[in-house]
Length: 453
Image (tube, rainbow, N blue to C red; front, side, top):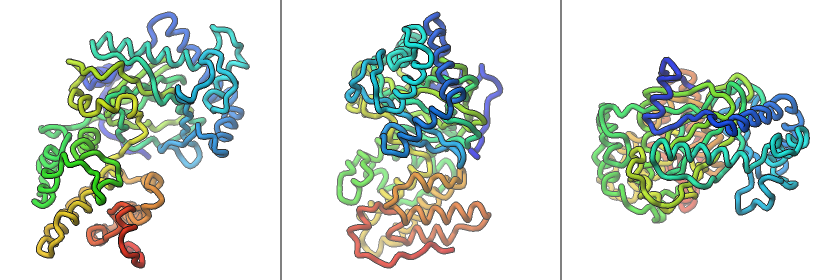
């Protein structure tokens, strides 16, 4: 079950907090918006309830037969999966938005099946074009009310749904979308919204680079090893394109922390609402969020809003620096790269372990390198203890089996209430567990040692 954090007392307080964070929750206002909201409700009821078996057949046929438009998201249960059903990209889209010609795409098939049953008149049919236009109308509303940049096109459009419940919900994470906008258009009745997390800065600056990360750790009472400080500060802006740093595809440490550094901070509140069809949540590209735990079926449409150009807003909720750094990524950062706190720190450990080995090769530095590695592993264990879940194992690539086996042992011990000291030491001493596969392939092969039981 997903961990619960403190919550506010009323929807009014939640919406105010979200507004302060730069997140909008809009309900349909105009007559045309309300009509579309009714269509969304009818369509979602058709998919989730009245024609559930046939719609599930469409989804699973694509999922099981390499159709490429259906995937499964983390946060489901052993019984009820959470599906993402992607629309064709504009480049691949050879059908008319309103006509929706025959398509092998599962999202289009669901719309076509609904329209066949409900009539093809302009008033009763639901099309890709209508969904897109509704989302862009909400983007325009945000631009007017906040006097901020315009979002004039959409990317990565998909349905997200589950046919039944309960489900566990997701671990909190950040999707890399900056400078794009995250759009969630809720379609089903009494639909739990995406959970957004307000983070505690701990009376200091939020974690956005190597210096603020070190400061954050020290404000927690941690003693950050000098060797680790030196590597972080010296290489915060170093391009990570050498043999021992390029595997993860990170540009620089500071750019990664600018996007994902908030994951290290503690949660102050979790913010979620019960929504009705047509309610739309619009959030900046690097907010910490998660799919909610649910009791019943749920459906919404997701997309990214792409800004009109690379112009930086004067009042864009503190995102100016991010926009400058990610200006070339307009339309590219579509949320497909995402990190939870545990998985981000695992990759960060892999990067820093190789950098420590490369920077400090002499025998007189062995103790200081081990001290830095031990600190990093102990931080990782803290993050795992905060939110222990076996789903992490499914999100780690198959070729990284050493860290997956180690993580599985850690999770097992935490569940059993046993100490993990020996496993921490295994990770510190190992030349495989917290290293990227490309580095391990360049080493002489050794017989694999199982983590201490």
